[in-house]
Structures are given as C-alpha cells and as structure tokens.
Length: 83
Image 1 (cartoon, rainbow, N blue to C red):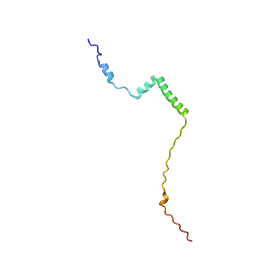
Image 2: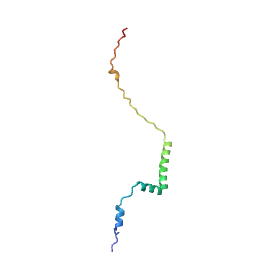
Image 3: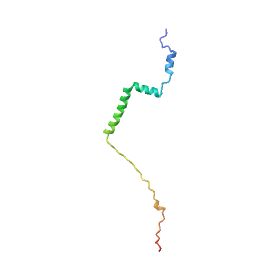
Image 4: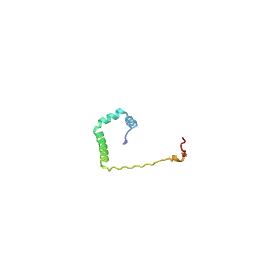
C-alpha cells in the first residue's frame, strides 16, 4: 500500500499555472481587502507626517564658485581723446 501523495492532473496544473497579474485582478483584490490596504497606507502616511513634524529641521548646503579670470585676456591701454 502506498502512503505517499498521488499526483493528479489538477495538482500539477495548480502548481504550474501563473498568477493573474492584470489590472482588473489587482483592483478586485484591493476591493476585497479594503481594510488591510487602508491600514497599511494610513500607517505609512501617519509615520511620514510624524517624522516630518517631530524630527529637528536640519539644512545642509554646499556650493562651489567657479570664477574665470577674464581680465588677463583683455588688453588695456589708455588713449586720451583728441579733439
């Protein structure tokens, strides 16, 4: 007598079938699990708001000025006006 599980066509098909990843399936799952989705989204939103209000404000900035000395290329001569 065999004590192991007998593989039938239905168990093989169930393991080898791909999950339905369509937009309609996602919306249906969302509608079925409204409370779960709302609690996860709400907790993320409340955590973000609490962190932005309670954490101290810190501002850090760095800047580099790149200045080209253009006066070296300019030729300067003094010429008095002739009337």
